[in-house]
Length: 418
Image 1 (cartoon, one colour):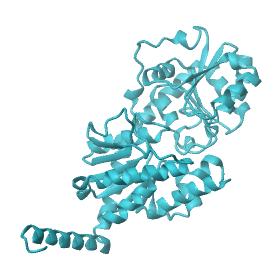
Image 2 (image 1 turned 90 degrees about the horizontal axis):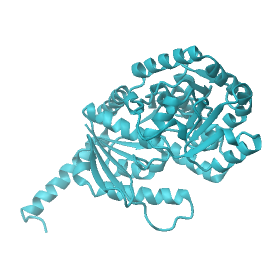
Image 3 (image 1 turned 180 degrees about the vertical axis):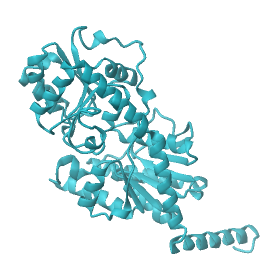
Image 4 (image 1 turned 90 degrees about the vertical axis):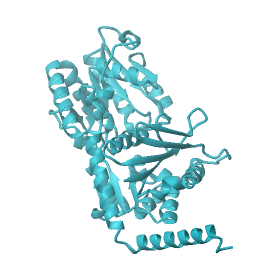
C-alpha cells in the first residue's frame, strides 16, 4: 500500500507534537509494509528530498510573498504543498490513500482528493474550540470551519483519545462510524538516559528536589498553575527547583508571574532543550508535572512514563485515559493550584510511592502505547477505506478516465492523433 501524507510539521521543523507524531507513525507504518511519502514544510537548510529509513520525505519552501496573517501564510503553504505533489506523477500514480494531519494542510488535501479521485483520511490532533475553550473571534471561527471542512471531506477521521472523539462528535457533529480512536505511541529507547556532556549541577544543587515540566509555553498547557502551586510546595520543601523547559509565546507572562509570586529564584526557564538534555532532566527529576487546561492526548505524560519519571497531571482530556490515579501516576483537579501542590508533595515526600508509580507506568507504556500498535490500527483503517473505495462509482470513473487518457497517448505515439 502506498500512502501520501501531508503535514505542516516534520522533524526537525517541529512546533508542537504533531511533527514527531508523523515521523514516528510513518516509520512504524513502513515496518508494517506501508510505503509512506510525506510532503511537508522545509527550509533552506534542509534537503528538498530525502529517504529516512523507510519514509520518503519531500520538503517545500512556503511562498516568500508577504502574508498579512498566519491564515494567509497557511493558504500559501498549501499551494506549495500541492505544487510539490503534482510534480511527482510517478508517486501519485500508485497512491491509494491521502492522509492529512490537521487543518493546516486541508486545502492541498482536498484538492488532491478530488483531482486524483482518491480517498482521504484525516487525523485531527486538536481543535481550535478546545484550545481556547470556545470560539471568541473571527480567526478562531475560521480555523474551526476549516477543521470541520477537513473532517467532512475525509472518508475516515482519526483521533488519539476518547476525549477527542467526544469533542469531534460534539463540535463538528460527526457520525460515530466515521471516527476511529488510535492512541499515540512512544519508544522508551528514545528516552533512555545516557551520561554525557550534560551535568545536573547546571540545573540544580545536589540537595535540591527537581520538579520538571517540558512542553510548549502556551496558556492551555497550564504552567501558570504550576507556578501558582510553587509557593505551597516550597513551604514544605524549600529546597526545590522548578525546571521549565520549552519555548512559546506565553513565556514572558510566565516569567512575570514567577516574579510576582516571589518564586523566580526557584524557577529555571531553560528555553529549548535537545534530546540528550531532556532525557537527563527526566532522569534527575523527582516528578514530572503537566498541569494542562486542555490536552487532546497528553503524549508528554507517556514520554515521562517511558523515561521512568513519576508523573502528576491535571485530570483533563487525554490525560484521564493514560494516567490512573494512585496506580501509575497522580491526577490533580485542572486549574487548581492547591490540588496540584498536594499531589506533587505526595511524590516528593514518599519515595516508595514514587517508585511504585513509575514502574507501573513504564510497564503500561511497554504494553499499550507503542508505535507498532498505532501503525497496525492505522493500516487497518487504510485497508478498510480502500476496500470501500474499490466498490464506489468514483473509482470506476477514475479507471475509465485513465483508460481513455492511456488510449489517447497510445494514438499520439502511433502518429494517429495530431
